[in-house]
Length: 315
Image (cartoon, rainbow, N blue to C red; front, side, top):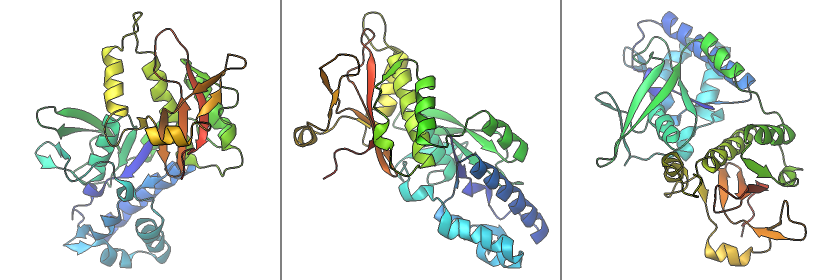
């Protein structure tokens, strides 16, 4: 579960500094609550250029705020981030809209695009604004193959506390391994698969993404019928996550398979003296971590997770 600050919820709507300051205070409280949970509220670098009131841009308006509030806000929006647009998954060629409004390039579009590809992204909006609905329906237009996604939207501290309380915080690699195993009963984790993480600094965001990757593999494993065919839901998961240039899962290239054959060959989790070649992997890009697993998937054979750690095929 990740959160993006809704840049569209600043649209020159404030009548005076007091109402803007109240809204800023509320948003920063939401941000702090998210950070307490081990997550981050990601923003867009262009946030700083939004109109606030009477046509004035944010940098001018915030000069009237108290020094500590002004510095905290500007530091987040210009230096700390994190900035989702630096690694945006949707592009200007993706046509996303809400009602009659094209939202391509916005946090809402990014959240919707990621959700359509198996993510769990939600947005945080300024209040008051034109974006106070708790559910925002987003349409991805794609040459007759339109898709619809609901993006959850939060403006109140109580609603954020409630949703965060339902999701356990991951605080270590050890905790990650425990959650992956408990949350993914369809998968067989080798006893050593998480050992490559030892000695590497714990990264909360990477841990969340690794858990999400395992959960997707777990869902896919359950989507095969008794004849070994992928169900309609399984085909949907495969199309969303295993195909396309931005797929979360992919096979290693033929060159990588040759150059890293030994590294991609693992001790078989259940067969003494045997090995298993697992070039298929799920990807975390910041930092570059990989989840390697057995392939292809079938109804009758176990699906083994054999490696969770730094990218193996580094040149």
